[in-house]
Image 1 (cartoon, rainbow, N blue to C red):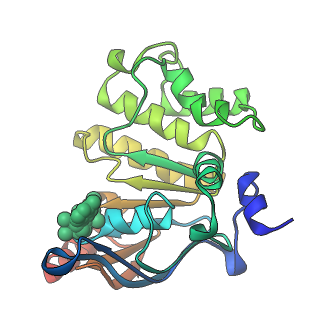
Image 2 (cartoon, helix red, strand yellow):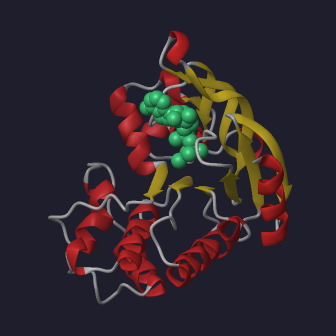
Amino acid sequence: MDETAQIGRGQSATGSGGTVARLVNATKTFGTGDAAVTALDNATIDFRRGEFTAVMGPSGSGKSTLMYCQSGLDQLSSGQAFIGDVDVSTLSDQELSIMRRSTLGFIFQSFHLVPALNARENITLPVDLDSNAEVDADFLDELATVLGIEHRLENLPSQLSGGQRQRVAVARAMVPRPDVIFADEPTGALDSKTSGELLAYLRTAVDDLGQTIVMVTHDAVAASHCDRVVYVQDGRLVDEAQHPTVDDVLNKILELS
Ligand code: ADP
Ligand code: MG
């Protein structure tokens, strides 16, 4: 079986050396001529299994572009993006969408829930769309309890608070047991208390379930929950650190801006 087929079947995407996702000389340019913007500039990075990584940098530095190109939501202008050992540019649209539903999980600032579906239906949607997969109901119940949304599963998103909606989005990302979750400013729309609870939950998912998470953020407190922080400036990866404190991150941001 070739690697493409394996990813399509939602099997483990661990590549050589425990690397779950990898960019090699990744460049992304938007627009042409005078209007061209290099959002990602020759970035090379590995994201390792079981690690909680923060991608930090000022607004407009290329964090979201890095995440979108890494996860196959957008295409690089040059260089390569791998999930496991699979170059995402070699996948068809259908293979990409299967990979995004089964091998990857996503959490966005704006939740991206389907308004007409209740919380439970939103959580199971990626698995329900995959004819070869079944929802692990026990795991869903366990997650809902840990996340404190076990009594809200029959509610529509409009009947939930922002924090509850984001917990639904976290459960939706986790239920397919993806190899890696990509989160883009997941705490961006939350107050500091709710945001702290969500980060603590993501930390637990990494520690207890071995979930790999790559989180784009510009929040130093959010980054301080991570095992590793990588810094982006003008589309380039300029530095990284292990187990950063809030002060470490704040100092680095001041230096970069
Ligand atoms: P960040 O997430 O760090 O705020 P982005 O990755 O969204 O940064 O953007 C990086 C740069 O690329 C910015 O200059 C932004 O304006 C530009 N950019 C992002 N997406 C597009 C797009 N679809 N079209 C044109 N320019 C874009
Ligand atoms: Mg962004």
